Image 1 (cartoon, rainbow, N blue to C red):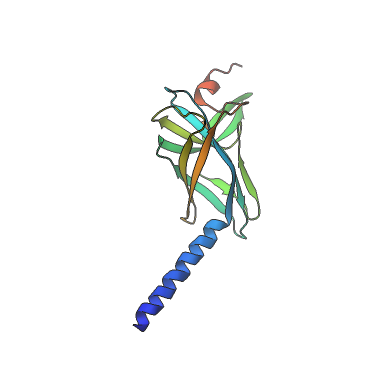
Image 2: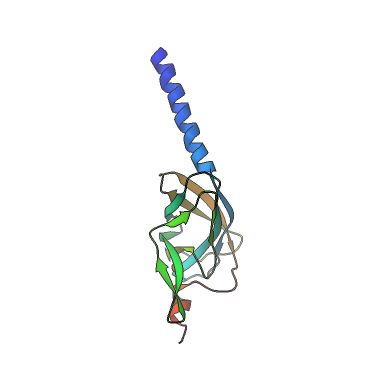
Length: 157
Ligand SMILES: [Cu+2]
């Protein structure tokens, strides 16, 4: 009986600490770019605020609406903005990572369908400590720099 109580309180402590870890990361203004049917890719944007005292990193993401989700950034190569896959996105302690058009973003690859505005997309983020953040992102029209593979390949020198 006593052993069970010890186990129960230990489990409670474990759950509480996981929740604290996850709560250190606050996600602001998450959204996904709307795309018409037949589109292969789209991008997701958000601000990731790390209120904790330890640096964290976003290391993976997944979504039921696409075959894969990759972490991407933009770099300028010979005056042309190109997208590049990165292994992680740093979340400095007390800092913020901004995923925005023309910069860091999540790339949703091999979409199962088009994404209309007024719908939502589930995305699960995985952090380097193994914690998960489940998000429901509204689908929005995103103007400005496209950040799409097709768009980038159409730019000229
Ligand atoms: Cu990309």
